[in-house]
Amino acid sequence: MAIPIEEAFSTIAARRRDELVITSAGTSSEVWWKTTGDTEQTFYLEASMSLSTLFAAGLAMSYPEARVWAFLGDGAFVMNTGMLFVERALALPNLVSIVIANRCYGSVGGVALPDAAEIDVAAVARAAGIAHVAEFRTMAALSQDFDAAFGAKEPTLIVLDAALPQKSYGSPPLDGPELKYRFGRALERRFGRTVLA
Amino acid sequence: MDEAKQKSGRSAGEVAAAIADILAGEGAELVASLPDGWIAPLIKHLGGDARFRHVPVNREESAVGLCSGAYFGGRMGVALMGASGFLTCIYAITKINYTYQIPLLFLITLRGLPGDTARYHVSNALYLKPVIDAIDLPMLTVERFDELPRIGEAYRHAQVLARPYVVGFTRDLLRGAR
Image (cartoon, rainbow over all chains, first blue to last red; front, side, top):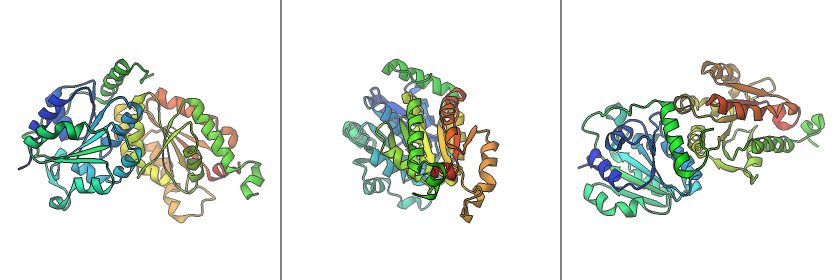
């Protein structure tokens, strides 16, 4: 039985301290927005197409003092598994990738991934040399082992064996430039540097 | 002395060094790349230049993702790639850079122009410029060494426009022949 994504995100949001968050298309953007309503420490990269974790890596490189969480679906993961080698080479201890493994393209209503039943995201990540890989199949395990999984000081990939959302919650009501400026100005205030000239 | 150096008096390495100086002078730090044969010497040079953080990527779109995130650190990134690889980035450019108005400097090769004997680059000769024009992407072609300072103009203007800017290099320029 897969984890209800709404419950998983509620737990993750409740345990979040000051992490910067990058979401990807569909499920993670919609559910994270519904759960947090955050418009300053989260960048909703809905036009991501497998690039949310590399976007997050660029951010994590720029702010080694911050921790960065990047959500992506297993559809995005399958689309660009080669990103793991870039992320391994970057070896960013402050980057946590969180794969929502629902074995389908959630953003389009659940069309199945190719050979969906056999996809083992965690095994692929381990084989690619990601230092810290954790996998959660129950809410109890997520709650119990959250700190060890999300707080590791080494490149981390977490797999959530999650169900599709109960319904479509809709995209955050923010257009691209608004997201850019809200996120960028919040970074300027928090880190005391110029981001957006 | 190779043919190109005989012709211009300078080497591909000197061209690469000049480009590196221009980028560093503009404040560029992050360079992400995936090579084609023409631009590989420039990538090697930048990779060995301590003024830059060079990240080899697995495919060209990954450079777009990485540089776009790093932009929120306050410095615009530079993505180096061949013409063919650039054409694979159209989705990422229009979705990420256009949607969120994130600037980025692309340095690419102008494959398929006269002098390129590779028939598999005919597609670039036919479609590279029309595709760039079709998405209204600003582009600068650099053919001669004395035009290199315009790379700095492109770097600055990308930030004014809040969208990517493409600089295309000819083979002769990169070899040091012009």
